[in-house]
Image 1 (cartoon, protein in one colour):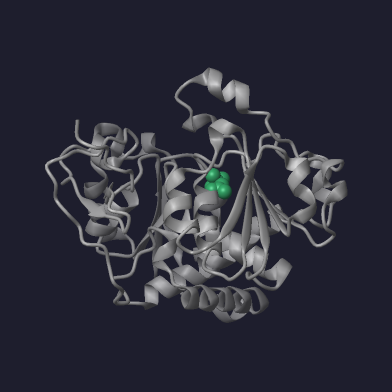
Image 2: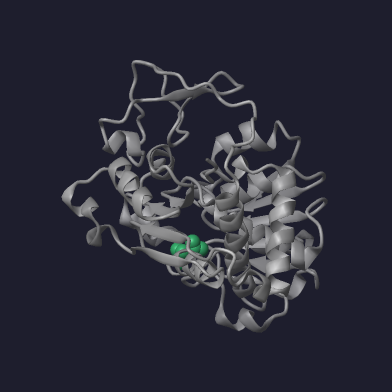
Length: 359
Ligand code: CP
């Protein structure tokens, strides 16, 4: 059984295959109109969504399949206290494939262990959002024609922005990619991204606070929203929310070939006046997401075996994960599971949070 929980579950070859498949679907949608006839996709969205849920549903409908599901925790038995594991086990009896969004990190991983059908992570807290990255990469591929040698600017909330973390990990696999991280001090990229992904891959990056300073060198500019829902103190959100606003004036020094991306929804990070600039690719990016989700659904429904890869050994330690947003912290009956990184740290198997040193 194949699932997609973390973008890095896909290797470079598989990504190219998915891109090829998505482009074929784009060019000849009629050839795929019955490809999932008789199959059902369940969309289990415990958190709000426009693009991800509706593009998953459109993807399955355009493949000739059917959809069922819910679009809020309140309309499922989660509101009565049902666990993610039980919900997944039940829905696996009704559907052939599941797309799940959940505010708790690691929830789709728990679902994948119980559902008995492929599970796709459609966003788990501030952790992973792999199908967003699929759409991001298809857009970059179509606009830039390559992944290698690009200078990618990531701007805004780089601390909680799960889409930025996945994009950095994905792009780090290509030669001569450089990153410019543009954020306020408080929202810098997490240290683990540097020490475990960028540094081992020899990827060059620098951290700046000025979007204007970075603009002339960028091939791709990935804008992000400062996410109110990820802040524990409203005053911190209020202070940081308007840190970066891309407008036509700021684009004056950008390359003609720049690709401006944003996972959307935007609040005010990109002025509406930018939408007509040929470099603005964020609406195309949302459409690319649908085609990549079509390609992914086809792949997972047709792939019975997970490719053998060196995996991480799961360890049981007499400790609890300290991340309040982790599924194993909230659903206390889940076994505590950890793994050891190459740097010797212990991390939670569900949310990847580092286990604090024992006091
Ligand atoms: N980009 C994205 O995940 O959008 P939604 O929250 O609308 O699904």
